Length: 176
Image 1 (cartoon, rainbow, N blue to C red):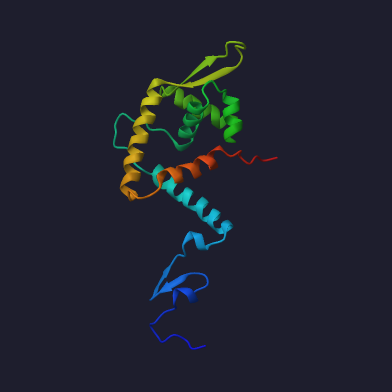
Image 2: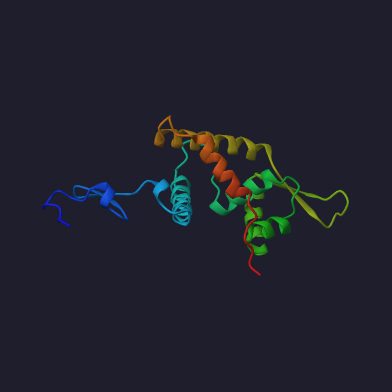
């Protein structure tokens, strides 16, 4: 088989692993990759995008700064009102001491409250405050603005959101 002339590059249909046009490699379409490769790429992209969103500096002065772990706890309590610190720690797979420290910090910031269980006063129940709900709405508004600047209007946001919801709702892998 004849080699391409110098500078001609390789035609797309001749390139097995990655497409080459001129001197620039082009990543193959995700549809061309095996499912396991696509899933690995999806996980990698989720991590990178999450870091990018996490690094965003909020412009709204009414947003109470929280650590990534505190934000995780706050979302969990908002999704599971009345949960206990122990259940939160178990479900999020964090040490109870880390959960306690994060929850104390959120309580000091006025973002969660603790209440004794009606049936068993030894059990503490957690709830987000109205301030937390307002702050969460402000955070989501800023994130929406950030993503709207990064994505073209033609992107299927509902489809992407559905995939992320499926992943988020799937049972977590637990250590034995």
